[in-house]
Length: 391
Image (cartoon, rainbow, N blue to C red; front, side, top):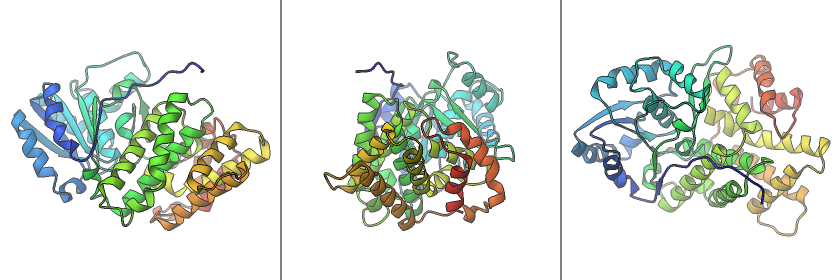
């Protein structure tokens, strides 16, 4: 067995009703003044918000703030400025990836008065450096990128130069995670669909990476098994099923662990770049390009590297999803492409053009994405074709 390293994973509390463990976790962190960060609507719509606030009130003071968009440096600085005088000692983020990213940034920025980006950047440029940090408890209400278990986050600074900032540092990893399927039931079908395809894409790219460890691969594979029969169900007749939502929550968490322990793949790099240059959420960029990116990558691998081991990894996932046995690797690769492209068409996934993206916007995205092709060496025209296919 080859040597490997494995990134820290926070304690995970999984299962229906586990959100009721929140008070106990806060007590473990000796919290008395809690900053609660939520999204704008879903938690309140689920009927859980008031109960959570009531449960937390036993610790003294609960300060509630809303993150209703992808976090910006101004939003983070503003929340920190408003909360600093309250001597917050625990941050709780309950929401989607943006809410959890906001919690990561705030937990690392609350004590000092310097700007969020400057402080975060000082950590990223000095991986061994640590700052004082307030304990962060992450509770996702969507099943997508698995941000709750990763050391990564994004701060939105969209501009012509691609100024959305993406950061990674071990200190950004939450200190505890609650995965409660009950909190996912109110997630709308459109959001469930896009986030589910993000989960699938992240699992696949981590699985396809050449240097993924045996431990990481085992976790990724269990996530793929959980997702394959439940993504479409979660968007339709299984939307209110705790079992279905639980499988998707688990798959999302597995994808986050996979991404924390593997390199960024083509689709992630393309979606990160596109969402940096253009006003489109990462989840939409990633989900809408999932089928096209897989198809073009397989074609490039077959043309230039017919014996590439990545093709065998893709075929293994194709066999899992297709369900047939004793077929050729080429068959399973094509089957996986057909399945993913069909899901993109069946599910309510927007096209790039619905966000005002036009052919003239693509060249800088293509150039930047060339940096994200470590295992699949795509050419400019191939990356352009992926984007063009979903305009």
